[in-house]
Length: 165
Image (cartoon, rainbow, N blue to C red; front, side):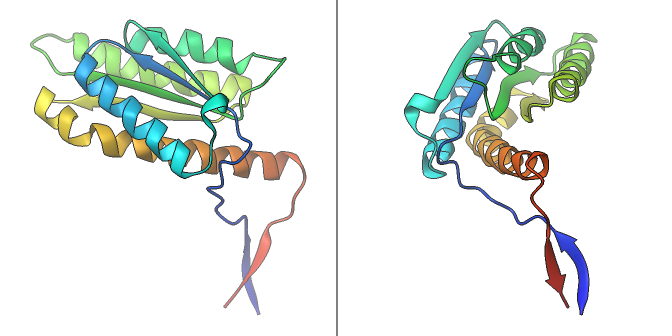
């Protein structure tokens, strides 16, 4: 008896082209996010030649570059990754940057149809960011690869597989 149908998870990065946009503000944390993402992409089979990194000043500059990459027609990206660190300060600026960067990343994803893994960390202090940076970068890499494969399967008309139970 079939319980439902499902697209299987696929984290095979072979042949995928991935773009990463990383902020420089809070550099140590951002470097760790990038390192975690690139290491995981290589583990998933994405070749170095198929990874492009763009550096921007901070989280609010990420969406514009994501949109430029998503609009690339000659050699399109299968998925994108946004990486930055927003550390709470003493002003309301933290909320503005956190909320607006997240919203804009989602808008780019929906407007362009290119999957984007959002790795813009929002943390209370540097220590929290340093603890989470490698894991979050790796999580975003896995998310980007899985979403690229799922999105491609749906667009190509692949059928989900029955789940027995």
